[in-house]
Length: 210
Ligand SMILES: C[S@@+](CC[C@H](N)C(=O)[O-])C[C@H]1O[C@@H](n2cnc3c(N)ncnc32)[C@H](O)[C@@H]1O
Image (cartoon, rainbow, N blue to C red; front, side, top):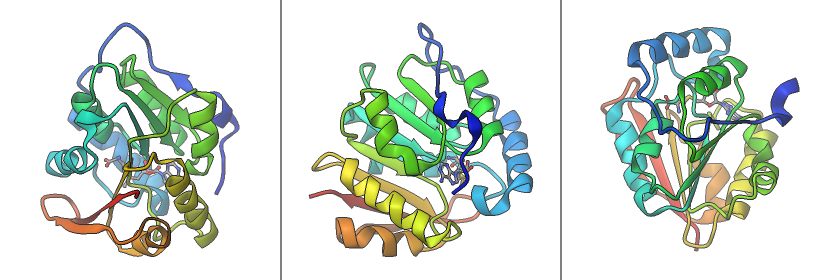
């Protein structure tokens, strides 16, 4: 997977202020532009619905988490929902591959609990370590396992299973079911659900690491 030159310089969101609500319309316009730039990587024309966001928050048990990782925050709607539920002492590492989405997040998301990284999810383990974050309680992911090169999907799946703490959760929302083929060998059978109130309707897979 391609990596940006700036990928090693993650931006820590400004300390001292909580997440500010982002304009949903502005997020949607940015998101659509991202889809036009790179449809296979972004995988959807509009950001996730609030119904999907709430399902992700519940399934990942974010309210009880100490450390959460988001793979593919996009324009940050899902990130804001995760932050709303995360305890005040929690940490959120958000890893985004698209440079403009990352810039948008850095401009609009100000919360001392969040660390934004411009990088591929393939650098998950290294980024957790360099940011001195504990083994995540939950990883939430919208990155498209169905369109990434097979070896990239395999690498990311292996890392997710490695870094999660025992009892930790991996929650993936996907249009297609390929993600199950990559994660089930590591984490066993997931709980499978559909979220119909989303454009398009998506599958939500939840694994718990034993
Ligand atoms: C379906 S969008 C989800 C965006 C947002 N979380 C939402 O639900 O509205 C998938 C996101 O994953 C990002 N992405 C794709 N491949 C990635 C990778 N290997 N590492 C990190 N992010 C990736 C895309 O740039 C895009 O922002």
